[in-house]
Structures are given as C-alpha cells and as structure tokens.
Image (cartoon, rainbow, N blue to C red; front, side, top):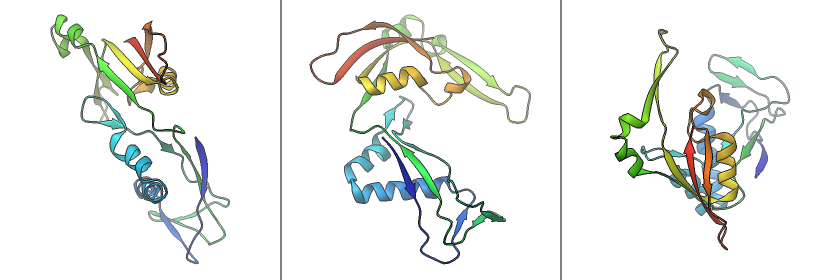
Length: 188
C-alpha cells in the first residue's frame, strides 16, 4: 500500500524543523494508532526481527514535498498556511509475517559466527570510517510470498546498497494451502 498524506496548517505561519524525520515518524505512528491500533503496534513493536535485537519496520515514508519552496531560517522551515506539504507512506496492505532463521548447525560446523562472517571497512582511512560485519550462511526464510519476493528483490539487512543482504534460493517448498511459504535460502 502506498498513500499520499497532505498536511494542513492549523496556524497562520507554520514552521517545521529541518530535521523532521523523527517527529514525523512519531506523528505517523500516532495517526495510525488512532485509526488502527493493532496495525500501529505491529509496525512499531513487532517489525522484522534480525536476531541482533533490531527489528526492521514494515513501513517507510518520503521526504516532505512542498507546493512552493520553503524558506529556511536556522534549523526551521518557514511556511505560509497555503503551502500544504505532502509525503508518501508505503507499507505492505495486511498483517503478514516473515521469519528469518540462520542454519545454526552450519554455523557450529564452521566453528562459530566468526568463521561465517567477514568484517568490511567502509570509507577505510577516512574520518567517517565504520565497520560492518556480514554473514555468509544458509538460512530459512518463511512467511508471506509477497514479503519473501520483496526480500529477494531488495535484500535482507540495512546495508543492502553496500553488497550486503543479497541471496539466492537453493530450495523452495511448494506453497501449503495457507498463505505461508517455507523456503530455504543461502546468502551470497
């Protein structure tokens, strides 16, 4: 599902902080909670578990788009009441789950996590240098076909654009009579 949300000012000279991502995210959760509390709870608390005490959320939103360019004063966007910004919100249409489970026996056979992972230095030698650890191990991905296809097309993880998260199917079970599909995968 992708919707466009248009914001309407309640005051004559509204302002928006230039760093509006967090307050806007909080406002979206609040709106969703008023309209559909269970869905809001799913998005906020459940998400997609990674196994490292993180959860990927099942929604995203765009930057704010303005009819007229906003004036900037320090860290605030200055608007007039006729300049109604809008944004796009995108999320899957239903409460479907996807589960990700690493083949623990494979990890043990290989001698532990350190032997199935690789440390990558991003911006090596620069002040912004950071480290990212990637894992190469078979895993089982199960859940709705829609989410599995999305994961296949986009990858799994937060560093997909850095060559992390891509995987290939090595075995696929026929879909059961429910909407669940269990598939074995291996990362590249």
